[in-house]
Length: 255
Image 1: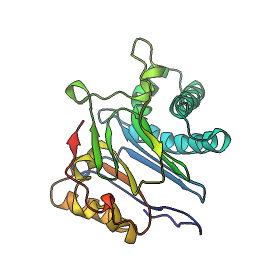
Image 2: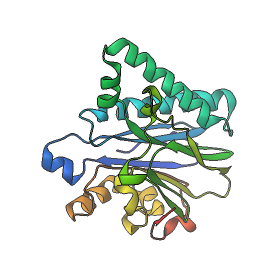
Image 3: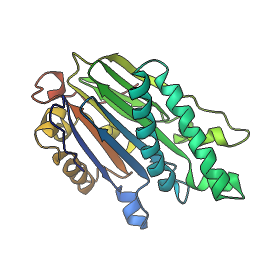
Image 4: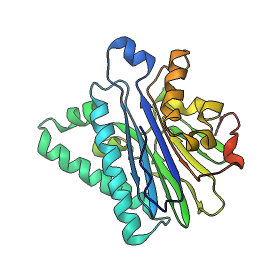
C-alpha cells in the first residue's frame, strides 16, 4: 500500500500489511489493521494487531485503526500534539467501542472477546512534533533508535478492549516518543509480526522513501523466506532525501 503525497509535504509515507505464513496455512484472514492520514500539515499512521486466539479480531483491529487515525487527526487539528494526546485519543476509542457493543450484541462480553481485542501503535508527525503512543506490543523506530515492545507474560499483551470487560485490568496508553520533529529523519511503527525486520536493509527508511512500494515487497520476501510467520504490518514516515541515521538502522533490540 502506498499513499499519494500532496504538494508541500515534508515526509513520504510507505505502508505495507501482509498475512503471516501461519494464518495462510490455516486459511485464516490476517488480523492486523492499518490506517494512514497523510495531509500537508501532519501525517498520522496507525497499526493494530488483533488477538490471535479470537475468531474475528481482525474486525476490531481494522475498525480500530480507522477510528484511531481520525480521532488523532481531530485532536491534533484542534489542540496540537501534547502529553495529553494519547489519553484523549484512547478515551475516544473506548467510547466508540462501547457504543458499538451496545448496538451490536446482547452477550456483550462474548462480542468483545471475539471481535474487539487488539493492540495499537499510533505515530504522529507534524511540522513541530513527533509522537508515538499505543497500547500493547509491536515495535517502533525513530531514526537509529529501534525498540521492540514487551508482549507480556506468555505472549499475552494488553488489549485496548480489556477496558470494556469487567474484572480485567484497564490498560493505559503509553507515550513512547514525544519530541521535536526538526532533527528527525524517519519514524517507523510495526505490529509484532514485523518487529524483528526493522533492522533489515530491505526496510531501510531511506530506501523505501525512494520507492514506497518496496516496503510491502520486502515483507512478502521475508515471508517467502520463512521469516514472517505472524501477520506483519509496517508504516514508515520518512523525510525525502534523508541519508542520515535513517539510512542504516541497527538490528532491533528488545526494550
